[in-house]
Image 1 (cartoon, one colour):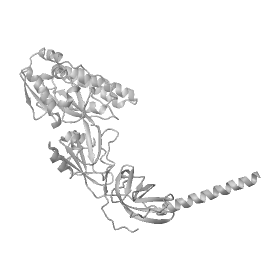
Image 2 (tube, one colour; image 1 turned 90 degrees about the vertical axis):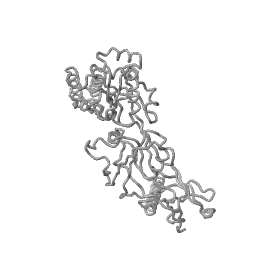
Image 3 (cartoon, helix red, strand yellow; image 1 turned 180 degrees about the vertical axis):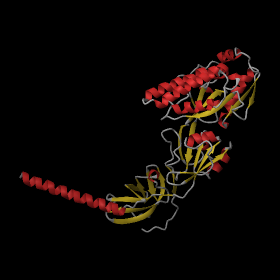
Image 4 (tube, one colour; image 1 turned 135 degrees about the vertical axis):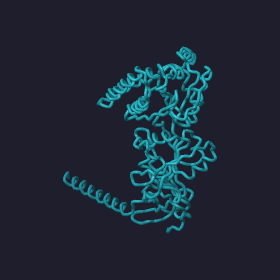
Length: 436
């Protein structure tokens, strides 16, 4: 009896295996490389509903066929597709009496357009901002507006248009595949895909170490006492910028270096020896102009005339962005160190502070343990802020919008736009000359 039972079990197992292999062979024969197999969810109101949509590169006008067993029963086209579901055009009652329980759909997916040039547009952004967003591998002297090349050999064209009018922005958007802006109003006026992320850089206020006005970091410290995160909606033309309390990328637990206290800022500046009657200020990007105006207004209340400088070389105060990297926290500090080291300072204490900071950064580069790296970064961060008067202000939020035929548009681990893996699809066009 037991032997007979074992034979029956073995026979049923072989029978099941044969059926499974046959099913796989039929499916492989029916499913082509540019087709997506999915379930038929339901037939309702003369339309077929399928278990896949735009996430599977299925769009309106994509062709499909219904396969039952080894036979193609019907051919048609997709009327509408969204994430996770799509449905067909009306079938003329074809499926009113068809049992669909053993059927499935093969839907043609959009093809990759390997020859297309993808146009990426940056809204009101300076070259440094664009370089930080794209990649730190772009050399400083490299022309941003030459066509870059993606991993699969596709061209990537960088575009810039400085407009404040929303209507003009909307009309221009039709010419671009991807748009990047600080203000979400530029991405909500037409139906596209959107993502947002913290920018891979922070805004900083720094003194010019070659100027006497930088002595002791008094000038920038007094201004920092007047700066607070609750002022950012009024000081930045963008949505949801985040206050930054550290000069390097970390876990967000840093405390503010000095509390917001305008009274203490006035007291500190009024005690500044040999206060100048005139100062110059430089800002590196259009997005920093309101912060510059705010600091100029504070100084004007102290009867200090502020001129906007065309270069950072001649300015007493500098507003700029420095790149950050979550995978390499010392990157922003190294960038800042090299920026300040280009300035020839005659003050021995400032030179010594820069030398010490440089040693911390070298130690961070050589350290193997992450906690050791962060420790040296914290020491360098403290030297920049408390000894030199370099202050982190805020981190902008980026809003990225892209057409539905753009795939793999996202950010890499460091927060930069992953332009090297982005692809562009050939969208299906309406063609109702299908066989049934």
